[in-house]
Amino acid sequence: MKLVQNIQDKFQGLIQASKRYPLTVLFLVVIAGLNTYLIQQETDDYINYVYSLIVGVFLSAVAQHIYERFFEKTSQRIALMGGSLLLTLLYFYTIGSSTVYDLEMTVKTSIIFLILAVAFIWVPTIKNRITFSESYLSAFKAFFTTVLFTVILYAGVGFIIFAVDQLLFSVDYKANLHSANLIISLFSPIFFLSYTPGYVTKKDEATQTPEKLVAKQNQIKNEVSVPKVLELLISYILIPLTAIFTVILLVYLLQNITGDFWTNNLLEPMLVSYSVTVILVYLLASNIETKSALLFRKIFPKVLVPIVLFQTISSVLKIQETGLTHGRYYVILFGLFAVIAGLIFSILPVKKNGWIAVVLIVLSVISITPPVDAFTVSQTSQTNLLKETLEKNQMLEENKLIPNADVSKEDKIKISQTIYYLTDMDYTEDIKWLAPYGQQLTYQFEEIFGFQPIYGETGFVNNQPAQDAYYATLDRQQTPVISIEDYDKMIAISYYEFSERSAIEFEVGDSTYAIETQGKEGKNLVLMDENKQSLMSIDLQEAMEQVATTTQTENLFTIEEGTVVAENEQVEMKVLFTSIDIYDDQYNSEFYLFVDVK
Image 1 (cartoon, one colour):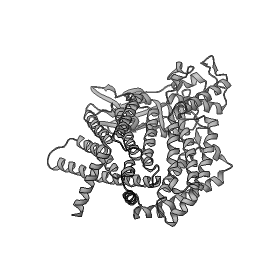
Image 2: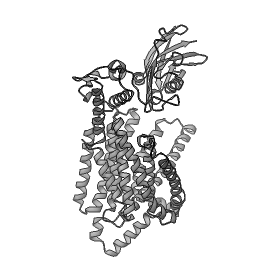
Image 3: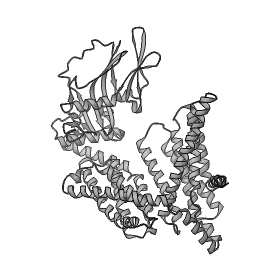
Image 4: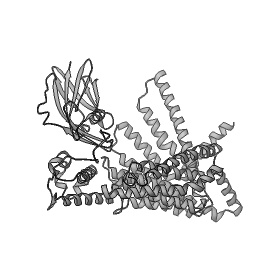
């Protein structure tokens, strides 16, 4: 009976959540319906519609919390819902309906999600007995409970579909996609909202007696209390692990404080992760009173400040050499936030933790607001750095680029890196003196600038290519003639362009074959027969890395070094690279493919 009652209570909770967040649920229903259509049509042409609807979900949920905290009239609630709907439409018309991946739009949308998620947690705590850390704990518990229920429900539904397909009748493979859509798009968000405590509202404060208000506050306190298991996890696992990692970082800082630390950006991602971990663990530890939690709250904010401050200063110094990119903009901005958060944690009592939400929201809004947003500032910085470097070396006159091979290695690196960034971000069209060159900036770099691009101090570490920077071409002086003897076909391919194509077909004898790309970013080069059966596959990214690790000469490789061969009983394929460009986990190359069908 108790199990049945729990199920009924949870079902009732879902209904109450739907009534509490009606516009949010409406957006979720539309998302589920749109995803159903996308699954059936096997297309992603409406991805921006989905993004807009998700923004609507966040906006409407935050609007509901604003209404509960500050307003009490139904007309005010309708106005807030209408405002969130208008902002959703404004967002959609801002990003447009283009289906082409846009990094800037994706990053800014992610920041909007962050702002609204923080506001969702913070708004109910404004002028309330419930603290920000308690509201955060409530969201934390709701999230992981939702994940657990979602995984179990999806596994159960998947097992049922599998059983029906194996034992009764064939089931369309899309059934799994549709079930996942309904569970993730509709059930999970409503389930999460059902765990959001019914905080004391403005209407409650105006209509309820003091006794009832105190009773409701006490009930909410129980809902946001820390479960015993979570208390043990935080006190005896998360805090000790964080402490050990902190000691390692401090030792590193002390050993390298006068060395390469100030110009070495390898620790940036690690320190950002460390800062996030400390802040989140601190908020969780704010709700418990064990000795380890008390010690953590007393010491770690004071340790966080100097560690993050040192790395932020290091990142700022790095700008002098490489200019500001959107990635480093966010690293510096987060460093500023982490320093302020550390100071807030060190100076103010736990009940004032909500100030970090205000700081995070303000900094996040700044980062997406022109002209001080991350992308506008980074474009201006990189453009100015490139222009100054070119003019310094007499390579830019009357808005025309002039090749110059007699440039210092330091300036070659600056020019190479800035050109790569500007072209990769599609900013060259906005720069008057770069726009006429278009794609030539990448494919005819040496002809335009007078030297081959260099993306690192040497491009090598211990005589091996650096992981994030490698560029080399086939030494044509040592390879004047390329033999096609013993092969049926030779095909010239550009990896960047071919990864976006469907296939290249050719005939050998009376049979037709096709070369296709498969896998993430088209990394696998596959030879298909007439029946669309795979005969041979070569991992192009792995092949590029193989050449990069065996190259003996900087920026050049021999025909032997640039050749990768794969063979089986049916076919032999040989890839001969003519150029390879690896930078920041992005791969590009041009090569000849030789095919011999046995």
